[in-house]
Image 1 (spheres, rainbow, N blue to C red):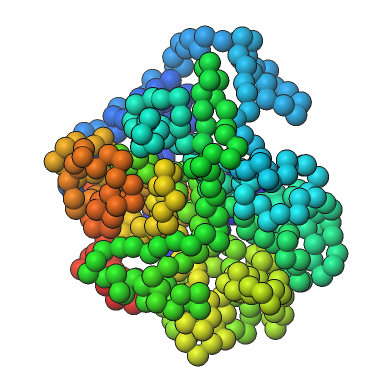
Image 2 (cartoon, rainbow, N blue to C red):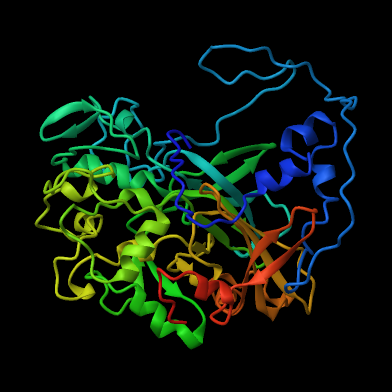
Length: 480
């Protein structure tokens, strides 16, 4: 992602993986230069692949051969260049399947690339393509793992760090155009126009587009029945372990839904996941920097303050200035017709309770969002997978009668690697089961964090309320 924010919100004394590898003289550069690459990584004894918290093997790590291995790539290398186009080796070609701004439906004007669009971008392809997956559709309109000529392409859109390109003269604040608000680290944002902000909000999220293959060439299908966008404004359902669902919903209470059962949207979706039953997992990565917490408007409760500090939801830098902040100023819009779309990005606590404001709005982000690409069902945030800057959710090879494991990274600085192991064993009859299958597998299970040791061993540590690690984190009072 351009303009990547690298603030370290992890204040623990845990040693990072890079330091551990360096002490073993085993670095990424060493692996690659040694010609062993990922093949060597697969032999590392760090962690048992699946199951519970068993310690990994203590087999010593072999020193890689520093001599580069011979490679046969099958094409000549592309020389360095500065031309504004995709340059491929001789004999290769490319076609554009779809691009930022392309319309989903024929009644949406073609993308001008001039910033003059007058729609809110909710029916166009989003920006910053990232994780993507292809879901084949059979003759009956159901998901199939077998290749067909009809499919749905699902693409994450990670950020709007280049949002100034989507307006005629750059971003506007207090009537002045030509600004370029970084996604992170803004000052004195002023009041922003509604349409600009809506475009920027809707650049985010996920594009779900039908594609078809004719004579070996794939094209995206305008006006196809499965075309849709999931944006930062799309209604979503909150789901998690049944025994704690009421407590989870209480954590999500806002003026939008005082019950906490639903929320809105998804942000900064980076690496993704695919389930064996045919749904898409959009991973919410660096989501914390869109919210504004004005100085002098402290949130209610020590836990909220601790949580925001841990995740990087930052306070405005200018004291007593309600229009300064560290976001893109989405909260500054005035819209009597639907003010909550913009107020939600201001997470001060002016109300008497959380149901009267948006102090809990950040709590609704930082999860995996499950989307069924072959239906219009409401996407679901799977809280059991943990809340952090999710980078991918890779499923283990499904074996009938055994639980599934999903492996995840946290793409913030000095963070951790996780896995979620389902309580339900895999049943191949659930292929094509959509969100219903997700309810079966993704809400009940165990979440683990990886601990790496200097000698190349490691173990999975289950995260639960009885874990001593919880007691060590004194600034936050875990309830369950």
